[in-house]
Image 1 (cartoon, each protein chain N blue to C red):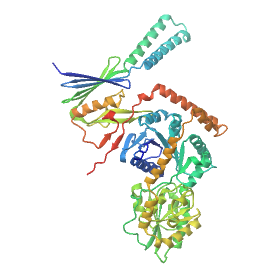
Image 2: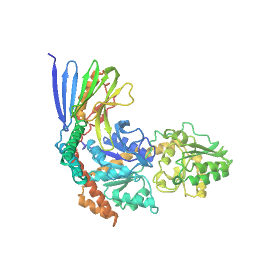
Image 3: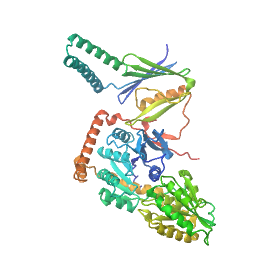
Image 4: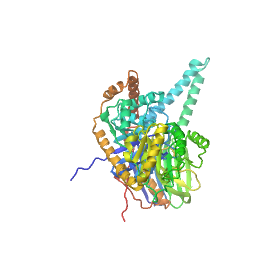
Amino acid sequence: MVDSDLDSDSCLGYNYLRDCKRSHDIHHILPPTSAFYTILLLCFSALLILATAFYLVFLMEETSVFIVLWSSLLLALLVKLLLRNTIISKESVVVMPAFGVQLETHYAGGKINRRFIPVDKILKPLLLECVTPVTCYWNLSLIVRGEPELTSVFKGLRPPATMLIPIWKALCAATDKVEEKSNITVEDGRYS
Amino acid sequence: MGQQKERHRILMVSDFFYPNFGGVENHIYYLSQCLLKLGHKVAVMTHAYGNRSGVRYMTGGLKVYYIPWTPFLMQNTLPTFYGTLPIIRTILIREKISLVHGHQAFSTLCHEALMHARTMGYKVVFTDHSLYGFSDVGSIHMNKVLQFTLADVTEAICVSHTSKENTVLRSGLPPEKVFVIPNAVDTAMFKPAVERPSHDEIVIVVISRLVYRKGADLLVEVIPEVCRLYPYVKICDKVRFIIGGDGPKRVRLEEMREKHSLQDRVEMLGAVPHAQVRSVLVSGHIFLNSSLTEAFCIAILEAASCGLLTVSTRVGGVPEVLPDDMVVLAEPDPSDMVRAIKKAISILPTIDPQVMHNRMKGLYDWHDVAKRTEIVYDRALKCTNQSLLGRFSRYLSCGAWAGKLFCLVMAIDFLLWCLLQIWQPAEHIEEVPDFTLSHDED
C-alpha cells in the first residue's frame, strides 16, 4: 500500500489541500466560494435572458412564443457554457521529484488545462509580490529555461502567501534549488 | 531605563523617484535610508518607469512599489482622483502603514495618495520642494490643488524659510503647522580632488538643466563678458567655462559660443549622469548657479562639498543654503553676476577645498534631516482624528465654489472607500512580513 499524507488549510476564503505520496506530491488550491459572487452572476444571467425575451416579444413584431422560449433556452445554455468554462474550480500542482512539475487548471465545466514542465528545464521557483494598477498579491512563478517570461504556477487564482510557501518549498526541494542561507530574517513569525 | 521610541511605518509617495534623478528623488531616497537606520519601516510608492514595474528592493531593504500607471506629462501620472484608491488602500493595509508622507506639489500621485489616506483616517505629512508663482494660469491652478490637499494635511515640511513663506501664502495653511527642514548632501559622494586644480587657469563649472528657470539666458550674457574681462589676469592666464547639462536653451549657448568665438574657452558636456557629476565638479574652482527661482538648490551643496566656491543668484532659498564666506551672491542681472564672479576670483586663493568639505560634513547631514523629520512624524501622530463633517468645514473654507467642489470630491471618495470595504474587507488583504537585514559580523 502506498503511503499517503493528506494535509489541509484554509485562509482568506481559499482552501489548500496537500496529497503527499511517495512518488509525487499534489498541492490543490480551491477558490473561495462566495455567495455574493454567485448571486451576482445569477442576477446577471437572469437579466440577460429577460432582456432577450423582452426584445423578442415587445420590439420584434409577429414573434411566436415558441421562438421566445427557444431563444431564452439557447441563451441560458450559452451563459451556462460560458460560466462553466471561465470559472475555475481548482488549481493543482503535481510535483514529481524525478520527472518534473505538472500544472493543472480545473474549470467548473469539467475542462482541465494541463502543462508539464520537465525538472531539467526548471531553473528556479520564485515567490514574488505582483503589483497591478489596482491591487497587490503574492505569486508563485518558475524560471523556465528557454522561456523569456516567468511561468506562473497559478493562472487564475491568487492564493495567500501562507499557502504558497509550502508549495514553493516543495518545488525547491524537487528541483534541487534549495535556497542558500540568506541573511534576511522574517520578523513576523507567521511566515517562518 | 529609557522608554523605547515608537517605531513608525511610513509610506513615501511621489511621482518622482529612481531611476529618475533629481532633488526630490535624492531627498526621498536618502531620507528613507536614514529613517530605516533609525529603526522605522519605510516603503516608497511611485509610478512604473518603463520596464521597472512591481516591487523592488533597494539598499538597506527599502521597499519600492512601482505601480503600473503610465506617466502622461513630465513624469506625472494622469489625475484620476479615484483611480488610485484601491491600490493605495491595499498598500496601506498590507504594509501596516501608520503615516503617509507625500513629496512635491507637482506630483499628482502624491495629491491623490494624501487625499485617500485622509479619507481612511491615516495621518499625512507633505513636503514641498519648490517655489511657485501667484499670477500665471498654471500657478493659480496648482495653488488651488495645493490648497485642497493641504486643507486636511496633518503637518507640512518645507526645505527653506522662503519655501515655507511661499507655501503658507499659497495654501492658507497655519504657519505653526509648517516645519522647515533643509535638504542635505551625501558628502561621501562629493569629496574634493586629492590634488587641487591648477591656478594657471580658472575653471568655472555650470551644471544644471539648460532651461529658462535655471537662468540659461543669463549665462548667454554673462559668459562672453567674463571671457572679455579675463583674457589674462595676475593670478591666472584665463578663465574657462565647463557647462554640463542639456535642455531647450542649449542651442542659445552654442550660438553664443560661435558668435563670440569661445570654442576653446567654453566646453559643452551635454547631459551629465549623476554618477559623473563629482568628476566634473572637481575639475573646477568656481561653481556658477544662475537660477531665477529656487527653493533650496542641492547643486550648490554638492559643489561646496567638492570644495568649489559658489557664485549664485540671490533668489528663493539660496541665501539660506551656505554661510557667507562660502558663497558670493548676486542679483539675477548680468552685470551684477559679472561683478560677483570677479569678487569670487579675487577671494579664490583663500579657499581650501578640504576645509570647505569638512565644514559641509558638519552642516548638512541626512541623519540630522531624518531626526528632525522624525519629530514631525511624532507630532503628526499625536494629532487627533477629525470626523468627516469636521473635515468638511476645512474644505468649505477653501472658497465659495471650490470649497463645495472639494467637499463633493471628498464625499465621493468616502463613499467609494466604504464600497471597497464591503467588496474587499481589510481582513481579506494579506499583510506582508517585515524583512530586516541582519549584518553578519566577522
